[in-house]
Image (cartoon, rainbow, N blue to C red; front, side):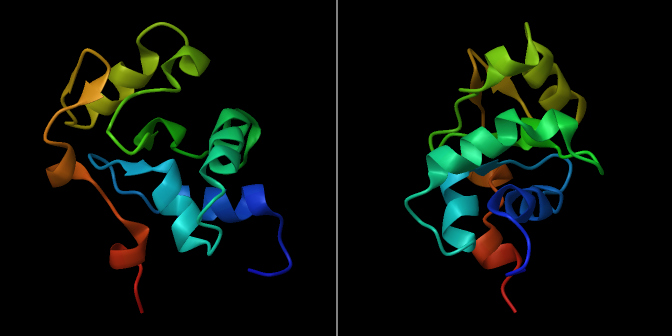
Length: 110
């Protein structure tokens, strides 16, 4: 993965998040070995609409399970996308966050 840019690395990880699960910006940053770069992961998610193949950016939330990027999706689109996958959201907060949380450091460990 050394010969690709940071955004592409983020997208590779985000594409592995299963339907019905969410992860955080910080978890992706930590998995990539750049623990302090969760904001850059957020910028990558903001630009993900142009990525091909598509990136499920709606599955990336903040460390408390808040839909902090929902305004980038317009209206309640982010919540609707998550709910269509079985993730419950109330007041922009993922419910049962610990249950649906997907940690790439655990899930992708070799």
